[in-house]
Length: 219
Length: 251
Length: 159
Image (cartoon, rainbow over the protein chains, first blue to last red):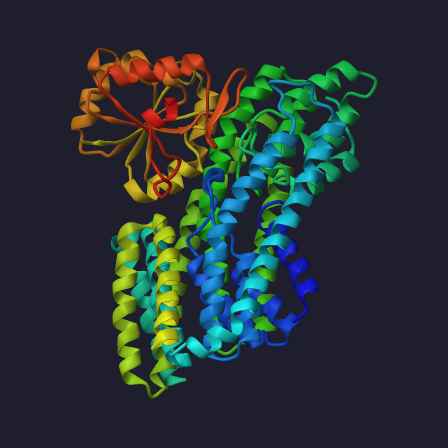
């Protein structure tokens, strides 16, 4: 596994999440496939990225509140999943991804504290252009390093427990996917809840379900 | 009215992509706002260091908005500075728009556009599209909307200044957000339908039954609790996977 | 009880209120109590831009608002009452009008003299005095930016 390029990609994914552009390459779906390409298994990247995407569907930083990040955790999940082949890899990858995501929320909090010290505070000091620019690029550097560090920690942990995990996982692939799908149904339901709930949107949901189910059976 | 020139405007627009780079709890994107305004403020206050200093001080105060919608505030603030409006008026304008631009953007992009486009891509993937095509489809579609919104916002901001509420009201963003949300829900249903249809073809009936039953309960639970369910879900699924690993290890 | 949320938030109607609390509490209207905004039409227009059509918005000065409170509480419409500073909320609560109600602190930001208490809450000494007076009027105070975030009690805020 190419540790260095993956770690750097993790830094970029972190940057895209908040600090730079927000073009959404940091979404689990995209991050998963990008990582998949780097480790030589884009289909696995799509599988894991696609499942994690559903977990993140209703999470967003409203008004700057704390949020778990999807990019670097997905990278770790896919890279670990590729290193440990089969259902054990998917399970271990997902587990690391979720834990790392919780950790990422804390790391964002720390980043914001650091930025708070760097950024000019007009109520206490004279703001100069160089101070603004330095704080800004400092923030980018710290965010990039945070993403790299987070990814590195996850990747190394994954490698460390890989062999033990591949022996321990008792489920086959369908069972593993079913477990993750059941978990994903909770945030999917929350998505419906925050979009107006059953009463306003239940019909649409049913229509989509029935339509696509029929189409997939007929075609 | 002073004119800082097209290049300064363009530079401010491009800098707006970095508006959240120094996100912090004290001023939120205040530093980013000042960072983006720098080229325009520099041109407007050429030979007036005192005025430049004051403007910079003002624009680095607390501000927040949805990052894409911030372009609208940036454009309007540039226009008001160019019109040499009373600094207190500019301040009050920014205080008044920071909330609305946040909630409009959250509803339009985070709750509407992003889930709808991402779900469209997931449906495509489940229907058999290869990884590259899926990601390409999502990134292009999503960012067409993203870039159009930013460019439109900056332009109307520059054009309308403090009156920017007028064009904003005409395009009725909450209504658009509602439409995207509807599309999102429909596609979510579609995703579930497609997943069911595909596992139908498999031969593991007990598993499918388990998945569907669990899925219905989970979905119902999630819809009751709402968005805040993510903390519980993340811990819950991690715990479940960890437990199965332990059982497998000792069993 | 038809006032489903009392909130002190400098940004008033923003993403956390409309999208965060809004999707949880499903309010029918926002009641914004603020002296300066009550008479400033252009600012009112800007503030209402982010509100979905099905939710109404009313702006009112604290004096008239005090008269309306009991009506709002008995009304069938679900309201979210917002002020952008603590003193306005205290003005509403004087004479124990809000006894037993819960007031939510959602966002007070950096200003000269204020110190960070929570990421979204900066307080100075006079803010703390106002909070204590508010508590004396029988109001239960806690800080919480979003429905899913941990709730922080007044004791740990001042302690």
